[in-house]
Length: 333
Image (tube, rainbow, N blue to C red):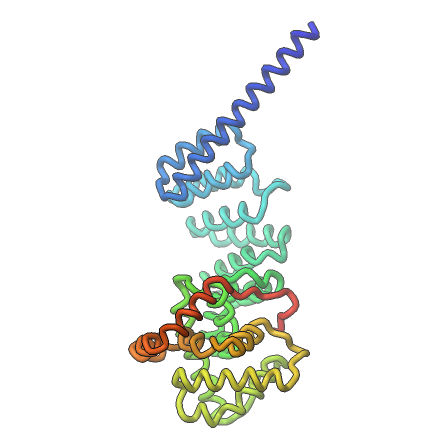
């Protein structure tokens, strides 16, 4: 009898292992189809995996994501909601469920979901960004509070910088639009949104110096902002000659030299350290051409890169392997 029970237990274990292996195989094939954008075959493979291992969180996420891409929102929501209240639910579960709710235009339900997610993962950059984007969809200005929190608590997550830069651009908060925009494009220098942010940065500089040249009044009460403006205003003479790429490069170089001469230990800032490094390595002119040239004057930029081919090639090679990483202790806004 004992031998029979042992055999049955062994048989059940073998069957379970076989099911798990088959689920794993179906899951792997489904993920490959999902990556390739073949959602029909992805759904078939992932659903087979789910039937074999319905508690596997990775399978649940990928299947619900597949339904989201297919716009089968109700199916996707049913699958992902089966684990959203469980301890095993991670931040990606909430992101997938949120995207499905947004696809259904169920914004109230989505907001409740994100509040639940942020209670569980309060410092998660992606979830703070998602909440901000949801509120922005509804034209609620509270969106910026979540993007700012994402920047403060999870400074290496780039999308909060992108959204905050765009928000501050519309609010004419030009300094923070500029700073967050430049941080973003150095985190994702070859991304599809980089060109859009470059134009915002150039516009922000133009607006800042138009204000400084007209009245020189520094209205921002933020101490870090005041320190930046106090150094920028020293460059009014150059700015009055126009904000060409060459003049901007000169202004920014003098700003960095002045900033560190003034012993800016109270406000260590990775972006300015990055600028200082580029100046020291002889890459800053190429960087400023890359940052402003195509927006300010495309043909002049193209001519400059041809005349300075080696310098620009050295800079772009450097940029590919030196994306900006923001630390946790440099939030000043």
